[in-house]
Image (cartoon, rainbow, N blue to C red; front, side, top):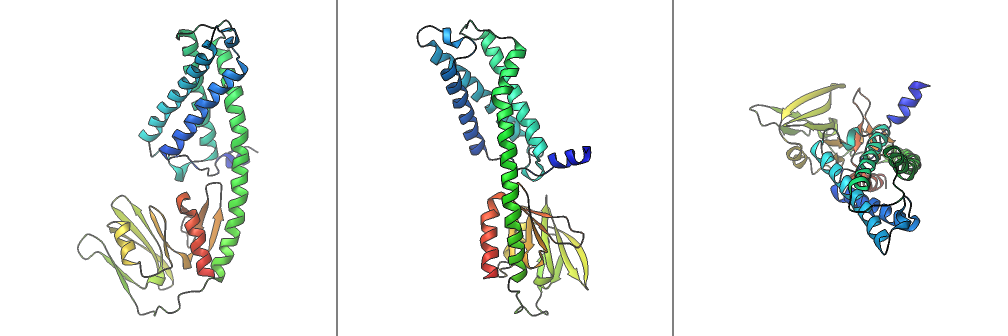
Length: 294
């Protein structure tokens, strides 16, 4: 039971890593808080004189906005931690709770030390309860619904893409004697190989890893160089696809397309770990597979 529970929350989940999109979410939350408080006037806001209820509501909305904006800076400062490739449903829930905890504290401090005084003052525990009741728990419900919807959609599409790949025309026109040379930056550092025998090429820092078949066995060669330069040398072969900033794959070597909440992962067998398709590449990937299968 515990293993199944942990396995569920270890499922991949898309991380909102783009500042513009996150900023949009932050604005929506700020407006929601201000609108909610102005409409329902809890915490004694209804007793405010004149149009102070409007300004109090807007102030809480601004505090929420600024609190989440600070967290955006935190996310951008630690890209290795807040990484889409390693993001999971459990991490999303944990850091969402952290967001609401931070917002609740900021709003409590504003209520206690801010410019406005309201009759319905609540203590720290009450503020945190209200923050999580109004924000985190509804957000969690919507998050799980979104996860299940994306998972079902992408798994269904992945099955179709796998079927299309298996029926796609193979590039038989490439003769076996044709060789391409993948050169590294160091002297005499190269891989001379038929392009059809390349499985995938991955980058890590200043190095690239070439996975290929030689004498019916999987081999791996590490070269010093950039993935972009290697990609340029293979542009004439339409079965290569830059599915991710760190991965260039041979689509004819893909054995299965797997779907998850983030999008797609490519399975190659041969003891090679699954390769992610970047979310920004999902549409291009589907279009390319369809064109190869037609």
